[in-house]
Amino acid sequence: MLFRCLIYLTKGGEYMKKILTKKGFTLIELIVVIAILAILAAILIPSISNYVDQANRSKNAANTRTYWTQIVLFEATSGSGVTATTPVAPTGGTCTGYTAGTMPTAISCDFGAYSVASPNFQAVND
Image (tube, rainbow, N blue to C red; front, side):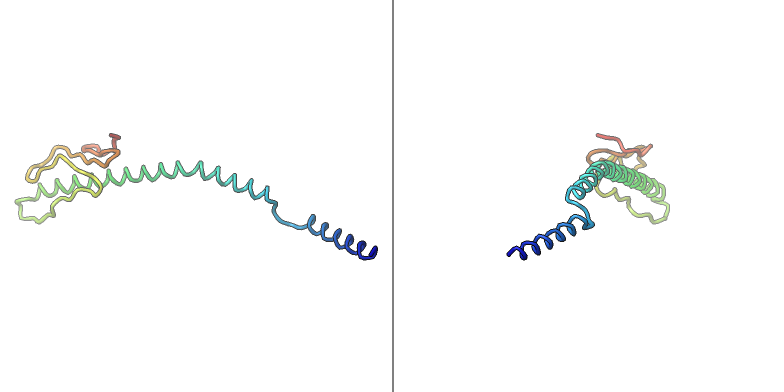
């Protein structure tokens, strides 16, 4: 019986030594790394969404500028025998200021949270 206890303690001691010298990450280290990654993500997400909003504003301003160019081309070439396609308003926006057959002095396209108007074609908050 005493012999069995000594073997058990010896094997147990070796087992404990293996556990203590085992290489790897502890749970605390993993939690700290995950917390740091969460903080970095919380910092980056708002700036990324701001870039997306700026890109949408630029896209809609460019589309409104293209719509203006279509209108001017259509009105300038109507009656001259040149075939031009009818101007099509940008998707996602409601445009005003153009009546077929007249050269507009200004147009405005409303995209919900902001609008784009000629002549400067800058997105303006509503």
